[in-house]
Amino acid sequence: MKILIMTLFVLSFSNLFSQKSNWTKTDEVNFKSDCKRGIKDSNSSLTKEQQDEYCDCIFRKIKLNFPDKYSQQPSIDWMKKKAKECLKPIISN
Image: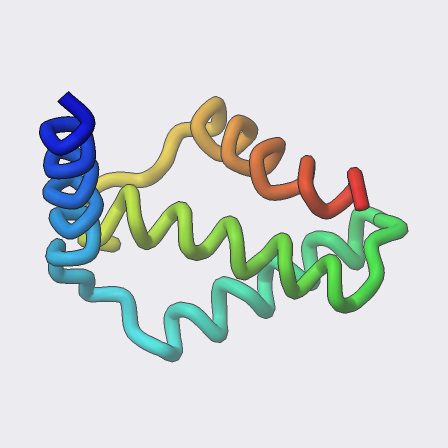
């Protein structure tokens, strides 16, 4: 049973990374820049390192779940959920 579970895990995990993405490095730089500007504009108390960690996390989640940047936009609810997921380890340290 453990072998079956591990096999399914590996197959599903490798499938996530086999999806082709059309996000460019420029898209990533622009997204992270906008993300950090949004944090700054909100008068957040996050340090620069925490801002970097948060914006990296959010971008990874978007890129993973939406490998085709033109296919659809994440919903507000989805973004709120992912924002909480990314902030939780940062603010708990």
